[in-house]
Each structure stands twice: as C-alpha cells, then as structure tokens.
Image 1 (cartoon, rainbow, N blue to C red):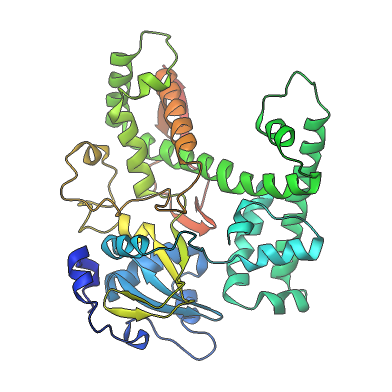
Image 2 (image 1 turned 90 degrees about the vertical axis):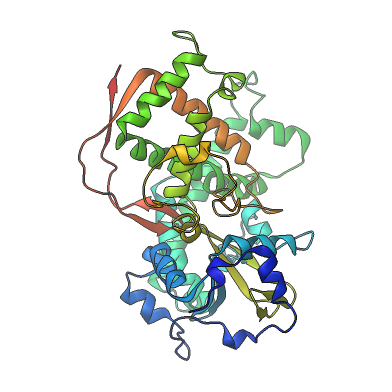
Length: 395
C-alpha cells in the first residue's frame, strides 16, 4: 500500500529527485473506455462518491488515480499533499471546467456567472442530480442525441433562469426606497444587462445561498443528537449576552464554543465534499510526476474522516477545536476551500451561521424526532437522503 496518506510536507519534498511516472500511481481497476465507472456503480453510484473516495483512500493511500469515462483525475486525500499542491499554484489557478453548464448557456444564449467564468428551488437538485453523468460521459453526445439526462439538466436550468429573471425584473421595478441591496448596488455601479444579471445571480444562488442553508441543516441535525452540547452553547451565550439581548459580531468573538460547534459540523458533514484543481504544469506530487492538464480532485470528506488527523472522526466533538492545534494538520479540514480559489463568501457564511445558531439556541431546544442515522448522498452538495428528523421546542 502506498503510504502517502501519512506523509509530512518535508518528507514529500524529499521525494522530488526522481518522481515515478503517472502510470505508477495506484488506483482502482481502469477498463478501456469506462475506467472505474463499473466499480463506482457497484458501490452505489456517483451519489455515493464521497464514501467511495474515502474507501479508496483507505485502500490506496493519500493519492491515487481514477478514470471515469471521459473524466481522468488524480485524487488527493492527504492534507500534506494538498498543502504542497496549493503552495505551487500559479497566480490564477483553475478549477475543473463544468462543461455542461457552459453548454447550456451557449444553447440558450444565456450569460455566464462567477462559477462558469472561473471554470432556487427544488429544480436546483434536479440540475445537480444530472450533472454527474454529464461530466463523466460526453456532454456533447448527450446534447446531440437529446438524452434524458440532457433534457432534465436543461429543463432544470430553464426553470432556475426564468425564476431569477422574474425576481430581478420585479426587484428593479420595486419601491425606489429599497436601493441599498446587492442587486441595486451592482446595477448602480456596473452597466450590466438583465441577461448578465440573471447569469450572475443564478450562480450566486447555487454557490452561496444553497451551501449556507445546507450547512445550517446539518448543524441543526448534529446538535439535535447532542443535548449536552446545546447546554454548553446556551451557557456560553448567557455568559456573554444579557437576557433578550440580540447577538452582535463583537459578542460572537467571545463565543469560541459556539464557533467550534459550527466548525465540527462542517468537518463531520461537509456541504461540499470535494473540489478540484487543473494541474497546469508537470508537477511532482507525492513522489509521482503528474502531467499538466490532469484534474486533481481534493477530497475534503476523506481527509476530515481520517482517524490519523481526527481521532473518533465519525463522532461529533466540538471540543476538539478548542484544544491546541499542534497535532492536527491545518489543511485536514477546509470546508470553504483554501488558497486563491477559497470561497469568496466564507466570512459572510460563517457570520450568518453564528448569528443564526445563537438566536435559535437562545429561543429553542433543538430536538430529534427519531434516533435513526441519516445518510448523506452527493448531489452537487452533500444532502440528506430523507427529511431531517429535527424539531424545535420553545424554551
């Protein structure tokens, strides 16, 4: 078994003299034309991708190669290797191109947003559900033969764009006194067309609103299973705030345990289980020569569930974030990404989660309605397979 999973940064650098060829990187069976696609289907399909990558990292180590039809990648599940990869980045690192999204915009003549330039509803889930198959097979062929996956993907985007356009038009024609929101700030300072605005805000909805809301759902679920954690959070809040006093950003600085609860939830149940980088130049990583153009998939979920970095990794323990960080690699849990392509809305999302949790704990007990585990699947984001068994009881 390759031992990159336990590498430290200086040891990895020491392998740089004569890297092994890309073909020597371990990985699952690679069949002509389909790669490891049958293996993935056998283990639950793309919706179970986060669990499959975790098992493969346990089997092959912190780096392995994997092909899924047209999608060829090297998988990174070692924080030391991630650190090296990020420190070698160019000033403008590239993510994997989401080709089906770009193809839709060309097909419908829509403009691009932040996500498609760099690489709203229940319909968002449909769009994400059909994105995976379009990425690992030929999106051009899906479009040419108008397959079910392409039609469903297109219909979902049609609905998202039409909804966005409706609300943008309504907002721009609304009360002139409401001129200090994001939409009006953008239109007042930049000469964007309505088509450009809809391209921008549809992707802001997916990249910002959906991710923060999903993180809050998992946070409430994790807290519902740990009444003793809620009690500690409430004690901390009552120490900092007077009865009835609303939380402020200054007060939040005095609530380390509340922040630890959020951080632990995002480690245990990350909203985004992986991200990507396009290797721009031939790169020595983990003792292997990775050719330029290969996609590096960074598996947050696999690193955060690694017992080498987080003892009792499958348990919800906020206290682990209050201890000195001498033993944990700081790259082992990076739910917002890291480096030049880190989430641009990180601080806003963290503040929203902190303020929301503070208010909820002040006013409600977060209760579980059953004790059955709730499995997560990958549908763009990591989402629950069923309605979360959570209820509120007024204090």
